[in-house]
Image 1 (cartoon, rainbow, N blue to C red):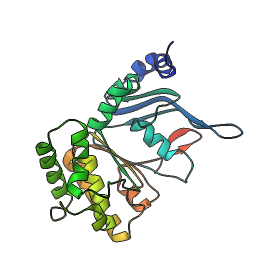
Image 2: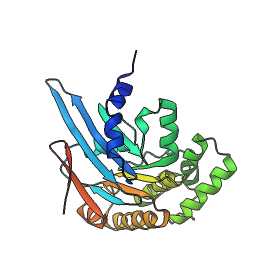
Image 3: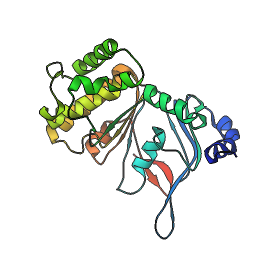
Image 4: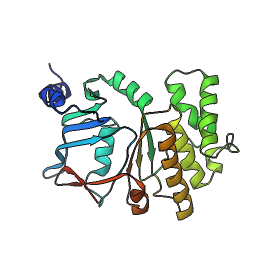
Length: 246
């Protein structure tokens, strides 16, 4: 029996080829919806979208329009009902689950409003986790974690448990964890939603400087228009399509 996701991928094969460009990430005819108690709610309706290498992008707009849904599809945390997401021309939703998980671990970093750190572990141990999941030795994982933690200004907090860190420091640990494997894409969902103005500004500046240094794609879902204004592009979702904003 043919898997539904495989069938949907085959349906868009020709469109994939026809739309291939030099974009680093390309969404092609992307559909995603959810069933509530009464009806089907379509969030994305054949959306097409492109992101260039090292680009910074803010996805803005009111709650409920599908910003996080779109981010989860870009990050391969969820699969579309139909359509493709191409990374450098390759449709990652044709990967089996194991290969897709490996791709996600190696190529995409995630930062969320709620940092999802392991409270019983230190900043270093949290930042090491993606390396250990990939099978990197403990010694090399520790070296990589220390390097990125120092870069985000936590060289004096390596051995502190995350419960002993401030909210801004915890979010910087989460950022270090997301970047420890030097991913080509960083996806951030309301990364400063729980921070005060001072800590928010520090995280904003850090995101931009790391984007410039590492040459990674940076996509941020945010209600913070100050953060959005710092991105090179701003988009929203209108009638199931991605729409550019001034």
